[in-house]
Amino acid sequence: MRKYRPDIEYGKVYDPKALERSLSLIQKAVQGERADELFYEYLIGLAPSKEEKNIIASIRDDERKHFKMFKKIYRDFTGRDITLTNEDLFQKPKSYVEGIKKALFGELRAIEMYREIRAGLPTKIYRDMLFEIITDEIKHSAKYNYLFTLNMATANHPNVENSEPRQWGKYINPLIKQGLEEAEETLDLEQVFQKFILSGVLVGQGYTAEEALEKVNENG
Image (cartoon, rainbow, N blue to C red; front, side, top):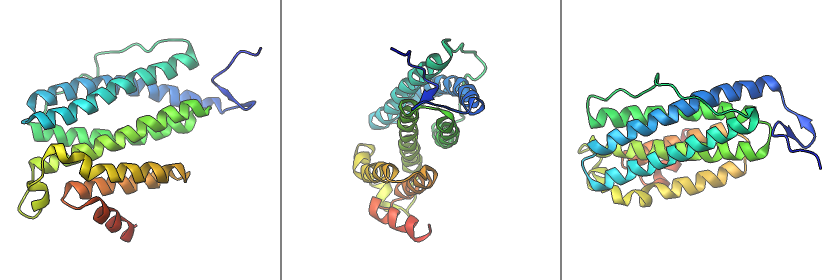
């Protein structure tokens, strides 16, 4: 029996330079996921309500999962473990809201890097792992946008002002479901991600999921 090699799929060897780039970014991603976990732990301590703490805790738990997944991918291809440093330990935000804003944009930047990692991985099993991580990050960015808007709500968005964090699933789950369905039917994942991140932003501003998707499609 031939030994399984993670750098070969269907008898075809992938571009070693692309794989090398992905592995380099995975090292960076592992460090970032660890820093994010610590940062989100800090935000949980600042969150003003149990519901908000639970939302951030769910994101933190996903980051722990991603940390393990990235380490496994790296080990499978290199046979080595990633050594963590203390270079990327988080800086405390000036406030809870400032921390939420920083977390939101951090999640969006992570999506861009994880797309590049996915593109350089040679086998479907590992690309599927990155797809799971990327879809988690999309959910995180939408959730952080919701928390940011919840704390910065104004009279212009009464639906948000009168909502509660525990209603989150009602607002965002339709977007997540449709986004995953569309991602299964197209190779243009960038367009799908952009569409549903923008929709999540609009939901955070008080639109329903249906209204948000319609508005994004109109301007798409």
